[in-house]
Length: 121
Image (tube, rainbow, N blue to C red; front, side):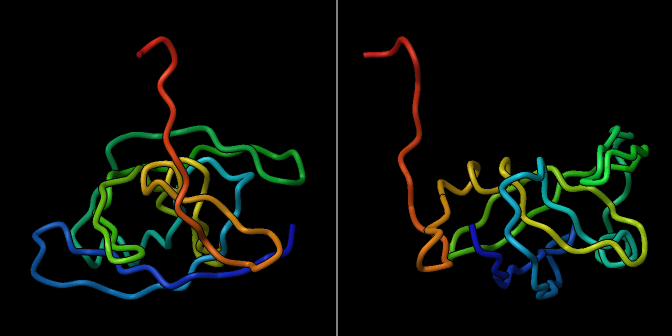
């Protein structure tokens, strides 16, 4: 699959301000990942720590929080890593699923997808 980025708007904790960020769509990543400095500036604080495994196999503990995001004209609250300086901003699988979006690998864009529930008629 080709790599591509999308613009998202991160809404401040008190919802008085927002910042636009460009993030790489990474279906291999679990959560949204944004710079901790940007999230703290918007009023977000760590809710705990989560072990993260990087592509090279190394591991670390990173703080996580819940962040209000606007993407594709919709607002949702998602889990986000409060990334260290220099780490890329990423949109992971949980964020895509929360927004009901998938990846068009040929068009390099996000597309609406259906959600699934097992055992419910």
